[in-house]
Image (cartoon, rainbow, N blue to C red; front, side, top):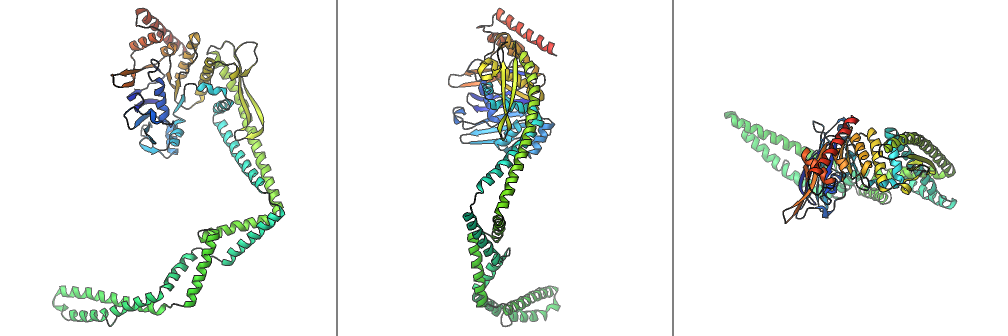
Length: 559
């Protein structure tokens, strides 16, 4: 669950911390106090776009931290992302934001926004204001149905998407293979020339480096021989070698008189031996090395050939040889082009059959899940004060498959007896859409592995008896999940396990938004305000206490 939220220098929030509890966490406050800003800070931590206007006036950076308790699923996801879990399995997501720059961290390790979003999928589900409007789009209906299908539907979707990409790639290849006889003859002639040119060169991997070393040696041959001769004159029998031998003989004649002299003689003997070895190796090198003008020209010509081939076919010999293999395969294709095209058409046919099979399997899963989801949604909607619900998830097969299969999914509903089912956008009001979305969230929560759910004014367009039904439904969800709800309805606030007040204050020069945990007595006062009381009169407080008692009684009945 979401244990805490810490916000610094974000809009009206100078520095605010909230420690959430289990069950239903309710946040209330006056209009404009910053309730939605709190949810916005959660979205920012999870990768939402940051605008410079969001920075608190005078601040250079803002920061948001989310702390989550852990479980085995979270630990496995962290390890799969090559991130180290904390010992207790907890997760700390941090985002520091500056103009033009953001830094994300998970448990102190710098990560990308994509990694944060990947982890957030199993940590928290955020339902923002007006999200229920997404139900007006059929694309959302398909997403909800597949989410209800769980792992089985996910795997079937992945299989269909993979088959679709393979089919489209082969179709594109076939479409682009349209050479006529003249073009094919021209392509074949060019491929034959290139293959022959590369084969005639008889290239060997690493050959160019060896030739370049030999060429550099040949070009500098005279300079090398002069340097060797000069070196030998200084170290040979007429130079240092002779002088060293005389010095060794002189020292050896007296070394018997002192151990230190003996040690010096041994050192000098080693030097004499090393110099003798050097002179012998140098003489052998000078005798072995010859610089042939013919060999120089051959090396130069070979290097020129290789460099010309590099300019045409690749930067290295390996690249040239690989290009030659590609052209040889292309030549084979051209030599029997009709058979190649027939084989390609057969591949396209098989890929399409594979796609049809995967799409049909996905359709069967969706139709099965549509029946189960329909039954559960109808039950949930009836609990949300829909007097009569005639609901259907219509799954119709498309003529042409897509990456998401071949299904057109649409939610149809009738809320009045005698009326035909019609698309949601044609019959549902804003309040009804809110309740339908809450029903969907309630049903999905039973299958969802996400512990924390956030609702920002899920109660839009709702009042009266319906509000009580919505509060009861939120209470049920909070029995299995942590629910954080921003609301303006007293019926929902009365159901809270934990109640926070979001309030705005000013010192005359600046304004700040803060979040405060309310005691039971303070929560009763806030309920009285939500009920429309201008002051905390005895009557207003009595009404608030009665509402709170009624909510607690309903929660007890559910247990």
